[in-house]
Amino acid sequence: MHFITGGAFNGKRGWVKKTYGDTALWISAYQETPLPTDIFQIDCDLLVLEGIESWVKDLTKTNDSYRCREIWNQTINQWWMWEQEKPERKLVVIGTDISKGIVPVDREDRVWRDITGWAYQDLAARADKLDIIWYGCNQTIKKVEE
Image 1 (cartoon, rainbow, N blue to C red):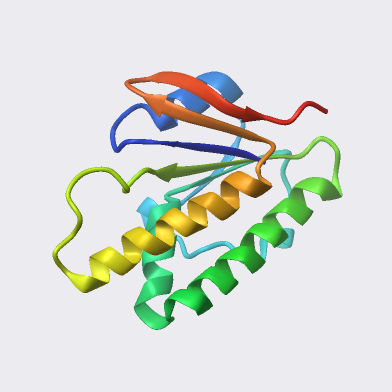
Image 2 (image 1 turned 60 degrees about the vertical axis):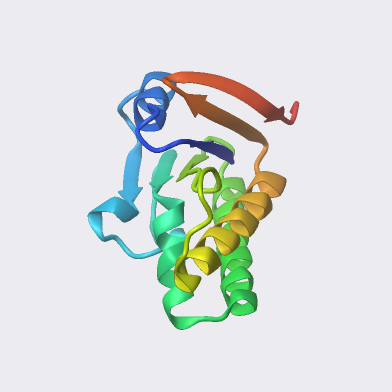
C-alpha cells in the first residue's frame, strides 16, 4: 500500500498519474463516492483511493472518535488484505494534509482534524511506502524493502 499526502492543490493527483500511469481505477471522495469498505468486489490491478480526509469527515458525522478510528482501522485492514490477495495488485491512497495552519474554531472541525491525523498515522503504519507531495515534488519518508 502506498500512502501519498501533502497540502491541498500541491500536485498529489498529478504526481500519482505520472508515477503510476493512467491505467488505475480511481475512487474519489471528491465525487461523493462513499468510503469503499467492501473492496473485495473490485477487480483491478491498480486502485487509487483519493480524498481520505473527506471520508474521515463523513465518519465523524455519525460516530464518536473511538468508533471512527475503529471503523477506519477495519477499513484499512480490508484494503491491505485486498492488495495482498494477488501479487500484481497495488493500492494507492491519497489524503490531503489538514494538520497545518490555524486550529479550527468549530468543535466539529477540530474533531475532524484530530481523527484525520490519527487515521493518517494508522495508514502510514500499515503502508509499505509513504510520500509527501509539495508543489508537485515528492519526498519519500517511508519505504519498506521487499
